[in-house]
Length: 256
Ligand code: ADP
Ligand code: MG
Image (cartoon, rainbow, N blue to C red; front, side):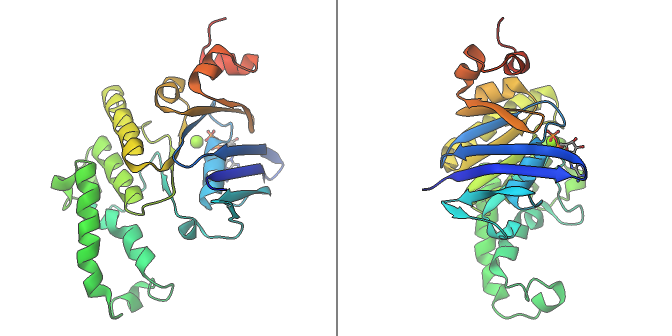
């Protein structure tokens, strides 16, 4: 069985149950939006899938294999954050190269002091350069490769973050409200570009947003989350026309 399977995930922070048993089956290549009000647990779920946070119980399977204990870097997923999370002291090209360099190095080589003296690093440079150029062209930031993040607009920074996610060639992209820091016009444009990227790459996308309109226009399916549970997961028109609960109807804005 391929795809991404999320099975009965719970998460407790102190006394609070933030995720109360979340299950989802996501097919390879699917674009799934995860929507719900602020604080319902969307980011927590995404971070658990990415391996950046540990669940209290439940399991995640990628391509049929449980990922318990597998570190974030070994799950072959790319996460894009709302805040972009770029390294301010590195150029655009160097920011995009970070996952490529990490992937090619053994844990010992990842130590910066040792890495400089390790053999074999020089011929990797050309190959890394090709991958960066390819990603930068796809995202139309090839002319910005020498700049630092501080010299870029919000929309350009978001493209760099997408570029960095892209070069890992991940099984799935996990995007956590990637457009929320952009102005309205740029959001519409970037939304269309993310949809196009999905079609070109044929990778799985999990797209977190609190914007139901965004989700309606982009997704194969929408999962509506509230209070740490998924209330409904279905195609946009089904969620809209035939909401399972009153809460789903109200959130999505279905006609009464
Ligand atoms: P969303 O992304 O849907 O806005 P989050 O997943 O960020 O929601 O947060 C869900 C709930 O979990 C919130 O009530 C939040 O305060 C709480 N929470 C998130 N991270 C932590 C943490 N590290 N420690 C304690 N509570 C947390
Ligand atoms: Mg969030």
